Each structure stands twice: as C-alpha cells, then as structure tokens.
Length: 249
Ligand SMILES: Nc1ncnc2c1ncn2[C@@H]1O[C@H](COP(=O)(O)OP(=O)(O)OP(=O)(O)O)[C@@H](O)[C@H]1O
Ligand SMILES: [Mg+2]
Image (cartoon, rainbow, N blue to C red):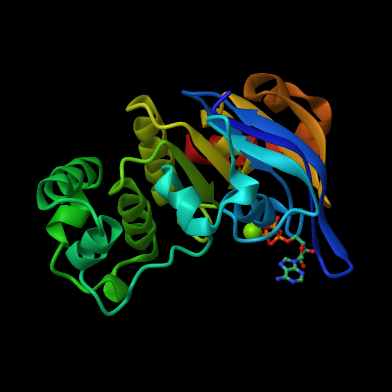
C-alpha cells in the first residue's frame, strides 16, 4: 500500500475529532471518505499532511513515517493537499499562482507542468493573465487543483472539491479528478457529496463523528441500504430525482 493510516486518533483539546481510524490507498486508486459536517474529514487530511499531531496511531507513506515529519517534509515526498475552500492567491494572476505551485522546480519543469495543467483545464489557459480573485468559484477550484499538480504529486489529498459549485461544474471537476487519476496519481478525496464521490471512487469509507463506520468497494457502498438512506437521501431522494426527470421529459 502507498498510504497506510493505522488506527489514528486526533484530539483538539477535549474534542476527539478522530478515533482509531484506519484506511489505506494503493498506488493507483481513488479512495473516498464520506461524512457529514464535523465528521472529521478535514482533520483526517490535515493529519496526513502533518498539520495536526496524532494522539496515537501511525501514518505510513511509501514505508516512511509521515507522523514523524514536518508538513514541508511530507510535501517534499509528493503528498499534495488541496485544502477546503479553494484557496488561491486572489491578487496574483492565474499563471503566477501556478508558478508559485512549481516553486523550487526548474524553469523547464515549471513549463512542462503548466502545459499539463492547461491541457486539463483549458479555461485556465484562456484566463492565465486574469487575477485569481476574479475567477468564478469553479475556476478557482480548478486553479487550486492545478497548482497542486505543478509538483507531479505522488498522492493527492482533496478536501471537498465540489463544495459550493453548481452541478455542471461539479461534474467537470469530478471528471478532471478521474483524468488526473488515470494519469497515474492516487487520490484520497473527502466529500459530503456522497453520490458523486462514490461514482468515481474505487474504495470508500464512511466517517461518523470521528469513527469509520463502514468501508468497502465504492460500488458496494453505493448499493448499501444504510448508505442510501443516510447519505444518498434514500427513498425521498429517489422520489425527488424521478419527479425531476419526468418533468424534464
Ligand atoms: N482547530 C480546532 N479546534 C477545535 N476543534 C476543532 C478544530 N478543528 C476542527 N475541530 C472539531 O473537530 C471536529 C471535526 O472537524 P473537521 O473539520 O475535521 O470536520 P469535517 O468533516 O471536515 O466537517 P465539514 O464537512 O464541515 O468540513 C468538529 O467537531 C470540529 O468542531
Ligand atoms: Mg471539512
């Protein structure tokens, strides 16, 4: 396994945000962690990136103990974290944001990486001289992902890339995530959008107030009655969906 999260617990003072959580990501897959607000999804990614300390447990990446490394040491291993809320440098242009993502790489590497990002996101190429703060929400999410791609990631951690995006943009962002994975980048994605995440993931886990309550192949979870009720809206959701579809015809 490329990434092994082994029985980790994380606490913020008296609040136990993660309790004994274990999961793994192999060399080529997309793994999704689903859960409601406050379940601990962001905390899990922050623990892997070294941004919060473990209370117990271990995190191994390619056999190395991530939990003993500082955040920059973890980043240097090729673990790229795209945080919640699409953080871009608003007063810099699209291209300057990408260049910053490639900081420390040679000019040639930066150019190659930028070409790759522009191929994935043609809109960013069109907007490369535009200030990032004036991009739409979806474009900013693409830029945040693009910036992460500037360093040829060995593992990409994605925190709710669909948050606040219109359905069409959500589809576009998820399609790109699949394409990035097809190019050989393993992905760990945390999402509240269970339906979409289960569509693209190989394996998935359900996190409820800090504990993993269900894990398995994404296909099996998508068919699981408990998951359908709690995360896919169950019968109510299906009814609404059908009503919407029949209106469309
Ligand atoms: N810096 C912090 N200090 C204290 N408590 C925190 C801190 N960060 C998170 N928490 C608490 O830890 C729990 C898990 O938070 P986390 O942000 O990981 O959830 P999440 O699943 O990402 O939620 P969301 O879907 O809203 O982004 C929550 O109860 C939250 O209030
Ligand atoms: Mg979060």
